[in-house]
Amino acid sequence: MATDWLGSIVSISCGDSLGVYQGRVSAVNQASQTISLTRPFHNGVKCLVPEVTFRAGDITELKILEIPGLGDNGQCGDFQHPDLGIPALECLGGASQNGTGKLLKKPSSAPQNIPRRTDVKTQEVALSPQLHPCSKSYMDRHIESLNSSKNFRRRHNSWSSSSRHPNQATPKKSSMKNGQMKNKDDECFGDDIEEILDTDFDFEGNLALFDKAAVFEEIETYERKSGTRSRGTPSEKAAARYRHDENILESEPIVYRRITVPQASKEFCTDSGLVVPSVSYELHKKLLSVAEKHGLTLERRLEMTGVCASQMALSLLGGPNRLNPKNIHQRPTVALLCGPHVKGAQGISCGRHLSNHDVDVILFLPNFVKMLESITNELTLFSKTQGQQVSSIKDLPETPVDLVINCLDCHENAFLRDQPWYKAAVDWANQNRAPVLSLDPPVNEMEQEIDAKWSLALGLPLSLGERAGRLYLCDIGIPQKVFQEVGINYHSPFGCKFVIPLHST
Image (cartoon, rainbow, N blue to C red; front, top):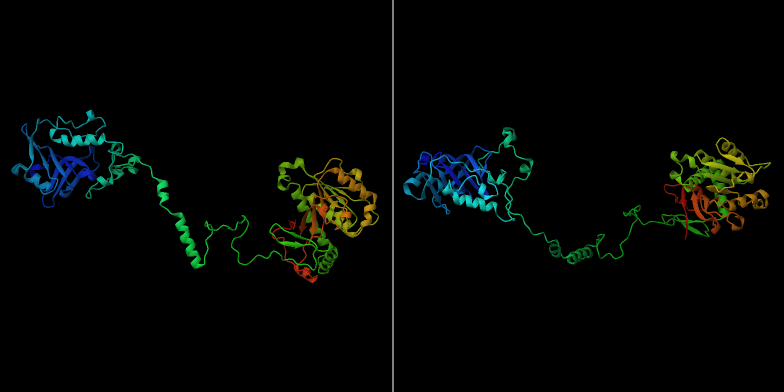
């Protein structure tokens, strides 16, 4: 009896999750309680698969829209079984005999159109209610779904995974025709979205559910019991603050006083906090004498001092901002004031390195009948550079220079201060209004005729006064055991640099 319904056009409702299907009956299996529709439509949209199969348990409502072979007296049935007490396929198999369904008279035997895509406007429904009175209830529900509230949104142009039957296979893109290929948006967002919430998420209300004070109290209780501590908790009132260049993983306490001397009259500290004590001139002279016995000759010290002094001078002149190939028209000018002693030789060595770095150097050194061998050797090397040597104050520039390096003062030969050339050089430096860098100035401020903005000490600082300006310390290469030999417990404070600033404590 089930074969009598083959070819009929039916409408099958599978509930809200699967929707409504329409199509022509192609197979009815009473044993497995399944029915198959060919060329099906799902919610008014043609399916991409040629055939779909339904189980009796999935069908909530079945309507017969057209029975083939019936004339004007043809009838269609409307079978209702919401409780599924009578299976849908049994209704198809025996509806004409037992009359379980309500029979409606078909108004016309003309060919009927299969329902097409339905627009939002009710007057443009493809499946007209006048032509199919037995499907009016389905069309009413379909139109109502289109005119539903804004809280609901249906996508009728998508084939979602929720509308696929387990027996259906998803067609590949290669087998689709050009007219049947879906849009990229449908492939990504093809699932039906039945409901979209209009209300926003209450962040403040959700945050109020979190008791922050109780959580931190629990953490503190655990820390007190276990003896541990976590950084960043609100209970830490005096939390340690670290700079970007400080290491927070401390393996052992930091010792800031790593240099001890027999007697220190003044102490300085570095940027890292290391304490650097001052030494007397006698101890400093003894340190250089012992270093020379171990191979750190005067020539080595002169070269090291010249390199460190020139490096500091280049930084004071502007460093890479001033000395670069794009700024060669503004080469800095440095005036070197040197005397006939070891400090003067150190200044000449500094001038040679500055001249090698494209700095205009003017070296002032008076003419003497007898000079130290170290000065003669340094002058020979300086003459090979582009630097200019003058012996008269009149040859020095009248306009301010970029930097004046003072190497006139000496620790022992104080009688030079009475020489005319010395007084003339001091007057020129004080009137030039250029910043002054003093190289290894003497301890006695009365012997410092030129006020310096910066001073450079060698190895360990002397107890200098305010006229020395800001104090810097340079490494001249004295080994650690040489310091120990003269009674100084020494650990290098320089780190990765050769010239470091010192601050008064």
